[in-house]
Image 1: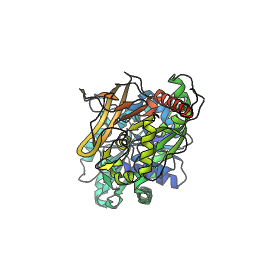
Image 2: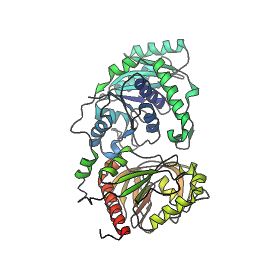
Image 3: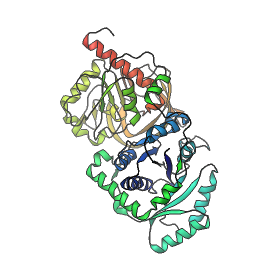
Image 4: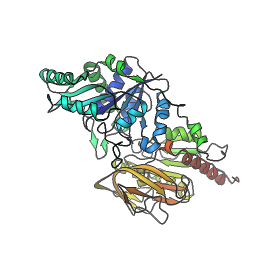
Length: 466
C-alpha cells in the first residue's frame, strides 16, 4: 500500500514546488519509488515532477473530476510506488473562490479525501517568534486537517533558524527541515507561471538536480517518510476501460482510428488520463510536434490540440506551413478535432500577426488581462464530444484573446463568480474548439464519443459504410 505526504504552504510563492520536486528527486535517488501528484488544474509543475520521479505527473482536482474520483485516481497513479508526494496549490485552505467554507479543490480538501498528513512549507523571510501564532492558526483552523510538521524555507542564518525552531517547539510542531535562502534555484517564469519543463530542456533537469541536492542536504528524509500515512482507497483504483464502461457510451466500433495528439514545446498542457482514455476507447494515439514535424502521423483520423504556449512559439508554428496546411485540410474535411485554449489559437487565422491554420475565422493576440478560474459550463451545441445541454466544470487559464470569441454555433456558455458570460468557442461539424480546459476523467463519455467519431470519419474517407 502506498503512503502519502502532502506538501502545502501558508501562501503561494512559499517554495512548494522547490520542496516538493526536490523531495521527489531526493527520495528517488536513494531508491524510493515515488508517485508524483499536484493538487488542482496545474499543467506546469507536473512536468517537473515527471523529471524528478520518472513517472507521469498527475493532478488531483475534485472540482474537475468530482471528489468521489480523487482516491481512485490517486490509487491509479500511485500503483507500484512506495511513497506519493502530493504538491498542494496556493495556500493550504485556498480553493475555488465562492465555494464557501469547504473551499472546494483546496489542498486541505484533497488531503482530507486521501486521509494524508500535511507538511507545511513556510517562507521564513521576515518571520521570527510570530511563526508560532501562524502555525497554531493553521493547526487548529480546520480540525480535520492533520499537520505533521513544518519545513522552513528561505532561512537567513543559523541564529534565524534557532529562533524559528523555538517558535515551532512552542506549539508542538516538528521541524523536518530548514532550507537556506537559495535565489539561484529560481526557474524562469512567464505570464502563466514557470517555463514548462519541456521548453526549459536540459536546464530543467539541472534545476531538478539542484532541488534534489538542496532537499537531501537540509531535509530529514527519514522523518518525512516516517510521518507519511498509507492511503486506504475506497473501492478499486481508477481504470480507463472501467470509466468508459461506466459512462455508457454505447457500443464500441471495433476499429482503432489514429488520433494525433499535439505535443512539443508549444502544446504541453494536458492530463495523463486523456491519452489513457483515448487508448482504452480504441484509438491508436500518435504524438506529433506542430513546431517541428512536417506532416501529421500516417492515417490520422482525429486531432487533439491541447493547451500550452503557442503565443511563445508563434514564429516556429507559422514557419511550418506544410503541417498547418495539412491540419486545415483535415479539419475542413470533417475530421473530429478537439482543441483547448492553445489549440484553439492554433486553429485561428493568426496569432499576434503570425499565420496559423486558418480553420477558424478569428484572430488571436496577447493581452494584459489574466483570465483564470473554474467555470460551470453548458454545451450550447452538440458536438463530437458533448451533447447539447451537457454540463461540465472546466478551467480557464490564459492571457490571450480571440476575436471574435465564438461563431453561430458556440461551444459553451458558462458562469464566472455567478455572472453568466457570453457564448464562447466554436463547433463546426466534428470540430470542437474552446478556451475551456476539461479533465477527461470527469467526462469519459466525451472521449468515447470522440473516438467513435474518428472511426466513422476513417471509414468515410476510405469509402467504407460506417
